[in-house]
Image 1 (cartoon, helix red, strand yellow):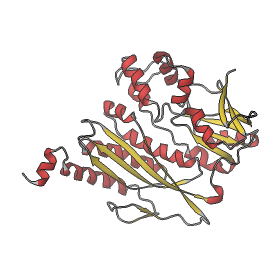
Image 2 (cartoon, helix red, strand yellow):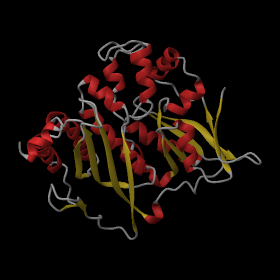
Image 3 (cartoon, helix red, strand yellow):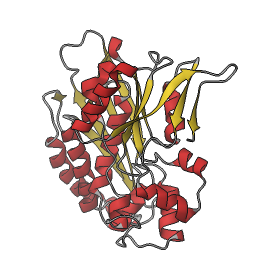
Image 4 (cartoon, helix red, strand yellow):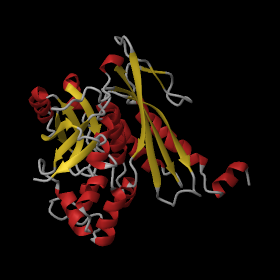
Length: 347
């Protein structure tokens, strides 16, 4: 038995990995922009900073799609989580006003299946192309002792750029500003551990069963692609004082991250419609309202804080690219002795 044979017997198949890399390389080539440098398949990806910046600042972020990959595996649909990963990452640097330049993905599995890896990266590539961003590289890993057969994990890193004096930090937020919520496309990439338990264990639904209160299947509802807000917000970034991407921690847990000292955000809890998926999860799982707010986005995937005079421009710009948006609250002076906070008002 050769060394390669012994490695295969231990669970790592090098020939399979090479085939996956060959397929992925073809997808990577389709994402290269004029800023791309170096060769596909190198040890590191390279992109040039665009011309025209006086003080360019690189904005970087790393994230994953969590246990949504388990739904993808159950459904046998793997491209959408790749697109989720890119859109999630684009949103994370968009909140600082950054334009995406390059992306790197990481796929880890027990046994790498080239067809599945190809599907995942096709979604990543589709997301990169939609944002004129280079898929600069990535990594595939086989770890049969760590992952169960048929399971994989997916993560990615993004690099963007913004002019230093145009970066958003939240320091411009002031009392009297309005809080605008932008519609999500469902769960996005957060809360799936609880959602899966309710849907599959409590409700006893199958992946192809109809999802209650919708005309869609469980597969379609749970694998709805995480929305990118780049088209809705890039044209109006100069009118925005702060942005918050609503991910784990919900509206309160993320909006508070961009509020300066001395103010609080007051959110009108009834100012936007909850998508049916959240109503069903709350009722069927007997989840309390406060826990729903901490775990899920509840239909608001991005928040902008703007001056009152700029609200109409921001909302209309989003609606032109078919992203519903609503005024969901306002910024007020912090109550005496209280820390910076986000609180909900029931009306």
